[in-house]
Image 1 (cartoon, rainbow, N blue to C red):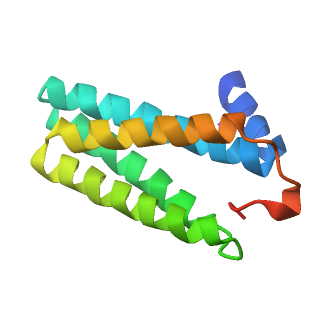
Image 2: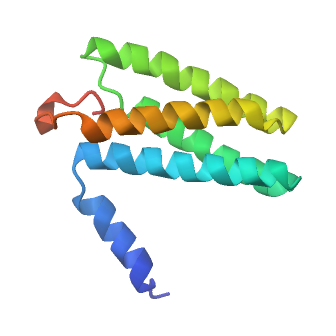
Length: 128
């Protein structure tokens, strides 16, 4: 099957992105999926809420896996990400949007920090 132009563009964007850009893309994805999960909870669409919150959890797992533990801040970020995972699981199990709203807020703040931070040299990234 031939990928559509948008899929081809997305694939190219990921392949040519810097490590910092990839992290921001991960944040964008998690934020999008959490918003969709919250909306689904509001509309009592259990299946859609579950699907989107699990996608967000998978992205947070990817953020944890990408940490470079040679830097002390990575351990702190890992703890924050683990807390976010716990909150997303809680939101999904209970279909309670409040824990997801909290994680959404944290991810928006972290993304803003990444967007505003000076760009480190590629070898000096806390995310691999």
